[in-house]
Image 1: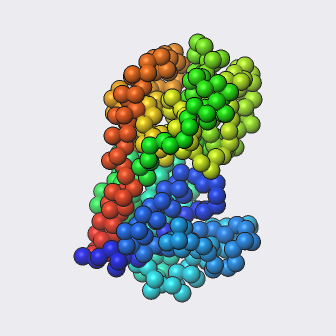
Image 2 (image 1 turned 90 degrees about the horizontal axis):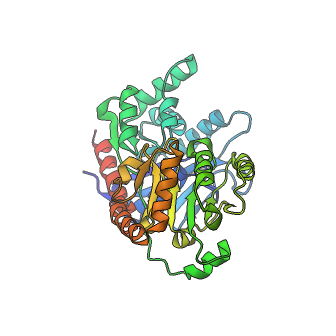
Image 3 (image 1 turned 90 degrees about the vertical axis):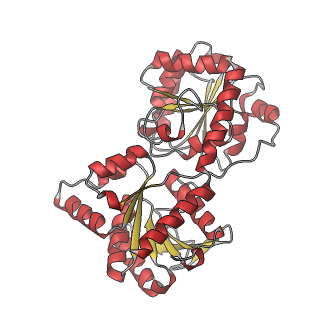
Length: 381
């Protein structure tokens, strides 16, 4: 069985810029943890700016080399395939496994792995990538044929995802279930009262927090409707952290519902940890979810959470014990749940402490160990 220092992995992600989505954050955190445990990891990504010369890269935390491969605007997928293939051929002795972090990168990785004789693992982070695997047109059928036959393992991040992949026709022996991981946080050491006052203007004002991309799947329109129906929301503050294509529409909806100034859009934040420290409650109204980084982070910070009863949320939260799973279309129920939590400090503390204990099972170190076991199994086949 290969030792950790004998395993060499080329991870493939869509981007590695400062403002990252959850899939990219997970990949970089996993790469860093694997490297710290003795696995050799390269991270390969697209180069969309001129700051990185061809083939050059940088290091993540001084450990993981990030390689930026050039792409063209006209044919980004084909040009990335060509750049990846050239890099992989030149560096074929530096890795044994290609680990792609979505299905689109998985198709390209499967082709490269097939051509140079390397094992391929593809992580499926959300249900939209399960749909990506479905057939239909000739091009979609070809894409499906490539990835299903040339990938050694598909990794699902939740039980719902695992079942969806199985129903999509992926052979059970090619499936693995490995949840996302979280770096367990230290207790808040910031002056929460001062920071709360700085953010909200009133240190005693209840703060409800959402963190995530402002896209349809995250269900922010439903959250705003619930907020509008919440008695006394004028005396509270809803912080919406993150950016995305729906920001302008959501801000417009906020004005139409006359929710200002009880709702604030903070945009992308490089340091979200301080906001978890000042919040009383975390909300996640997603329509679909793989396994949310922000949910794991909020629970690790000891926040009680109210989340949709979908996807990986159901794997992380024990309903009414370490959080609450709800249908955000039921505006009355959700508003009542928020009011109950905000009015009961003891309940919030109990649920938040249970959340912190529950999420300890998702520690990134343990997740990296599971990937190491998967790498070993694949290399022995």
